[in-house]
Image 1: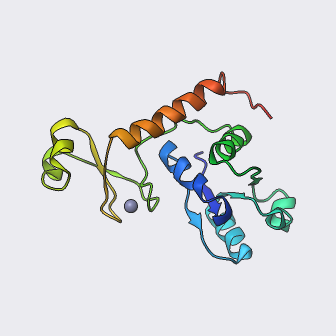
Image 2 (image 1 turned 180 degrees about the horizontal axis):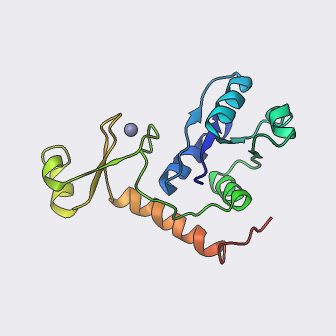
Length: 166
Ligand SMILES: [Zn+2]
């Protein structure tokens, strides 16, 4: 079964990285931890948080709900910790989830994005994805390449996948 997350606001940068990898990772922006726990339970999501109080909730201590207590401030360290704890695949399903709003992207043909993307992009890119919610169009430009390169590096430094390093 595919792993899904709910990302506490105190580790918000993780959400974007997880979406880049292709994981369903909405951000929880409210203050009410109880509500976050409820959502996680009802939608079968793993909580990522820095808040030790959240970890003391009964749903988590009893093992009914999975949560990872994130340590450290650097997003890269946080990402490695999450990936190691849950055996995530850095190359899971890249280019499939909207980085802004966490919706699944839909593939678009070159003709469909004509006039909607800058000319230099249209000339050089052939694969496009669009978010049905915020309408943002994605292509594998330099920003995406940079993030993907970072994820590839992490894959290599994590050694052979399969074994947990914790
Ligand atoms: Zn979107």
